Amino acid sequence: MHLALYLEAGTHQGGWRHPDSAASGGVDWRLYKQIARRAEAACLDMLFVADKLSIDDNYGGHFANTVKYRPVVRPEPLTLLAALAAVTDRIGVGGTVSSSYSAPYTAARMLANIDHISGGRAAWNVVTSVSDGEARNFGRAQHYAHGERYQRANEFIEVVQKLWDSWGDGALIKDVQNGLYADPSRFHYVDHHGANFDVRGPINIPRPPQGQPVLIQAGVSEAFIDLAAQNAEVVFVVQATLERAQDFYRLIKTKAKAFGRDPASIKVLPGIVPVVGRDERDAQEKDALLKALIRPEAGLSFMSASMNHDMARYPQDAPMPDISAQITGSKGRFEYVIKQAVERGLSVGQVGKGYAESLSFFSPVGSPAQVAEQLLSWYRAQACDGFVILPPYLEEADDLFLSQVVPCLQAAGVFRTAYPGSTLRDTLGLARPASRYD
Image 1: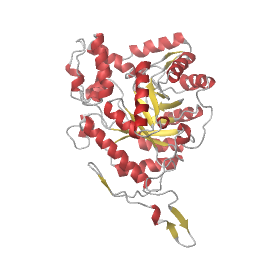
Image 2 (image 1 turned 30 degrees about the vertical axis):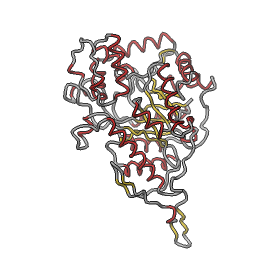
Image 3 (image 1 turned 120 degrees about the horizontal axis):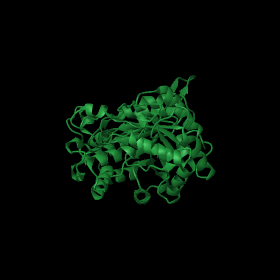
Image 4 (image 1 turned 135 degrees about the vertical axis):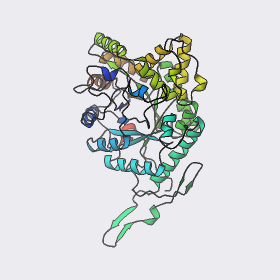
């Protein structure tokens, strides 16, 4: 089993208000460092830092309606990953890069540098971004259309990986006696001329220790599945039920094989929002308190930005309308959310409150042993290769998932007790890719 940890103030929109929460959405380096070392002691595969390129502003037409109800701080991922790499030794460090609003050359240099700093533990999550709010921070009135942004993402990945390969392994000779610094035959122009990017190359930093940092992708839409089946090495996915998770797992593994890939070379990790208590009663009480701390506006503002559709136009006590056709942001995730809400006859406010509990991720509740058993059931039923842990909130002194659930998984024989090597690829069981130019 593979386990990644989201390093943020809390996925649960009531989590920042919980009395045990150590962070309320700020940038707390001391806490991040402490949790990173705690996760490494538990032998987790990687830490992960998500990102968004704006403060959401389409709920009621103004950012004030977002900042009023939920944390909006987003530490810049790549600079934070470099810092985390410096205070850890074995755990992977992954972060989000927007293919819509980043330059491939800049992204390739920064990620290669993080892979060098960490000794081969870097990963990158390529996202297409979702909202017009993000677009307006980069000179566009509207975000790219769904198909267009996925086409751009495919080309972005290609260019970045070409740049990493533009240095051959062993390109640096550093023969001091004869004054020979590097072997010119090991350098390559990429000469990429595509629909979205023109990049000559080569990059000006040696090829990363992993050859290429591990490629993560996240989503569930049809366009995403094709892109991920061709390129992704780790897939973060939103699936709330075992049956849907099994269907997705079979589909993406089958598609990967159709593209000529070994299905084992793509690791599928559904997100989970675990609510762990000392015993079952403690867990249920914690879950009830977290739900009581949610304001519907927190969920509705989150949904508005992710769907790129303003939910403030609908009264909270009105039945949830079917707006599937109007979603221009994250389609695959929210088409299911809307369909379920309409079928169940939920009100707009109920949908917002329910979404804010787990963002549609699976949320196991129980004692450490009970939560571990729920994860084991998914894993053994071939619904996943592991999980992304999205804590409801971050704790200062202890984390019952790391300190008690993980040992249950280790005792069951499905999770490691030591790192198998020094790189993230070693941990994930992924091969080091050869350079396309060699």
